[in-house]
Length: 490
Ligand SMILES: [Fe+2]
Image 1 (cartoon, rainbow, N blue to C red):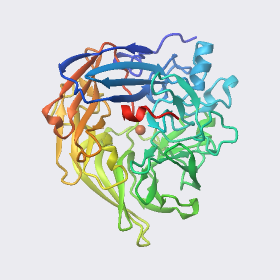
Image 2 (cartoon, rainbow, N blue to C red):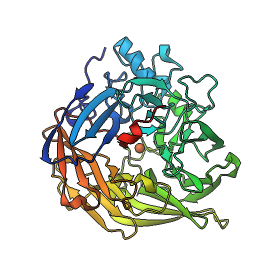
Image 3 (cartoon, rainbow, N blue to C red):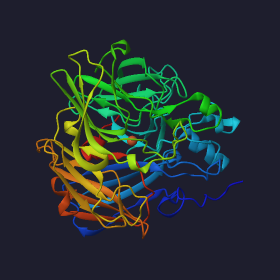
Image 4 (tube, rainbow, N blue to C red):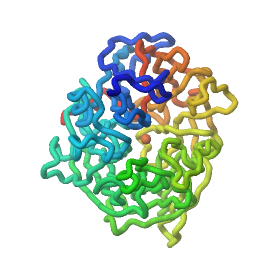
């Protein structure tokens, strides 16, 4: 029986499971001052396995989600961390060992958990209609109390914690839903909506009170991982990139997901409140795009900005041909796709917006779905040293997507920044006016701190550094919620 974590890079050094739940009041501010006007919480989530892997090894993306909250008030910052208590987490805690096997492969689980929701809720946390929702894209969202981080249960967007009589029939829901800043609506979708590796996609719109108001179903051209999507004022777009999935591979106990460079990228576009039979597929060259920065439309043209790499970025998803992982094609560049809904073309345009290598974007959320100028991302600055070769990113970047001008902040050769988040100065402030924050992992000392920057001057360095007395395992996504919004009662 495995009762210790493997001595492998996924479980050692900075990646050693933290498994810490608790609260720390008044974090030390070791440099600068926390702006007193900041009132709100930075929520984020990341994988942190509660038990050693059932199969002896696993990939980073399969760890149980721990949600963390940094709450700012009157210049002070308090911290909380709690596991998202998914069904998987509760079953394994009761058994005191891992029962679920490989990433997204239910055929590798112990028979007793067949049919249970397998999600780890480790990918993103989003606050909407008074609920903090933790997401894994193979499962329904898990609702958590935003003040205590206690788990409330799986949530089907109809005010209930039960799937019975739910309007939401998809088995899955994305980890990258989008909120329209004007209407407060929440847009999301489930892929593999009818089960492992199915081509079915279900699209949902929920109003600002969390009631589903629109649903559409359609099939993708091929079954694949659909990690993110794009909503504009008039359209919704579903990019299909060739991280293919296969039920047969799952049944054979192989990786469900594999890279297939023989397949093109497709982008399906339909009206924002359209039907599945209205989707129109555009085709483009094979590439890898995990995250989209933003999208907007003008005069019938849909513009989609994302971090685009030439080839497979994930070494743990093998190539279908058996070709070895190629590190030369993994660098993502900020690129713009243009899809013209006026003509009858079947392909889309593609241009590079910046020569910086970037990923993990955030924007001023008031400009989501609309023409925008400012984006903040993690960057790889090749002119700066990388002591730890495995850290892909060594800098925080602000990119002006109109001019292409990029400003970067480099924290030092041992520092690994994590996804930035944006805090706006107020409803009347100009786009980008405010702060951007990010956690930095010191890979030598194994420490974590939170740094805040003037959002439009990140290259000037942080306005304050907030020290955490515990190490946080590298996380994935999250964002800032203003205190006045947290007062919303569902
Ligand atoms: Fe993501």
